[in-house]
Image 1 (tube, rainbow, N blue to C red):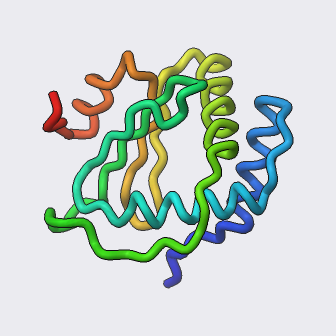
Image 2 (tube, rainbow, N blue to C red; image 1 turned 120 degrees about the vertical axis):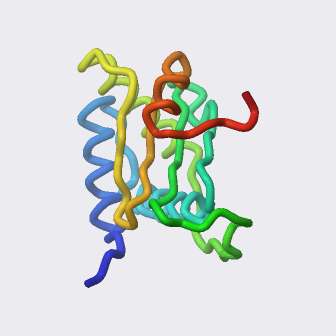
Image 3 (cartoon, rainbow, N blue to C red; image 1 turned 30 degrees about the vertical axis):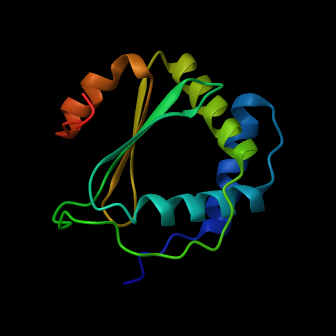
Length: 140
């Protein structure tokens, strides 16, 4: 069974989702490239990773939790061939913030194809999110 994400289709869907929530046109190919590269970078992590202020305009954070059963240790050596667009990240952040505001929420959980989880959240609920994910941050 193929678990690979079709980033061209996913990029187009994300671009449409952003435009629907923010009115901003975003390149589907730039979305696809940013999402594919971002997934390659983050899934190389073998432990949970919190990225505060990933989207500074929207004040959102992201917590990555690797799939259950991933042995802890140094990050897997990987080569990343794509590009992460700061403009796409800002647009995604604004769209997620618009979704939060429209629904009165402050956290979104996404499951990746490999079983990993991403939590997009407001900094104010970081403690609740890390507790729910079963993660202890070493920096705290």
